[in-house]
Image 1 (cartoon, helix red, strand yellow):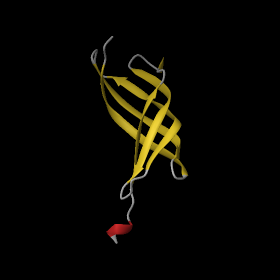
Image 2: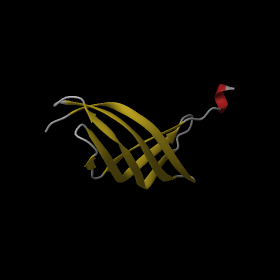
Image 3: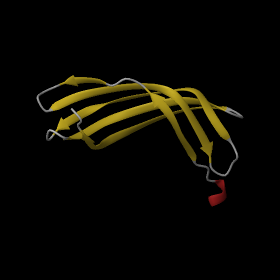
Amino acid sequence: NGNDDYWWSHGGLLVGPLFSFPVSNKIVWDIKPMVGKSWASITGTNLELTSPIAFSVETGYRFNVSRLIALTLGVVYSTAKYKGGFEQSIGTSAIKGGFAFRLK
């Protein structure tokens, strides 16, 4: 029954440093810890939840294929504890890939 389906959506604004370590001439290992604020909502309700503090950590590799382009592959984990009419902790993880423009 479609009326019983509730979907969470969440997002946020997080900031943090980027630590990069050369592995080889063309490969760099990146670690990006972040902290910030997160918001969530549930479809079919007027419930808006906020997290006073959210955390995320991302790690992965950059493969420099040319002077201007790099391919990326990594994982990210984020967690937040939302408060509204109730409390709910949410943790998400993802595998990420893409490309980057190198500016150096």
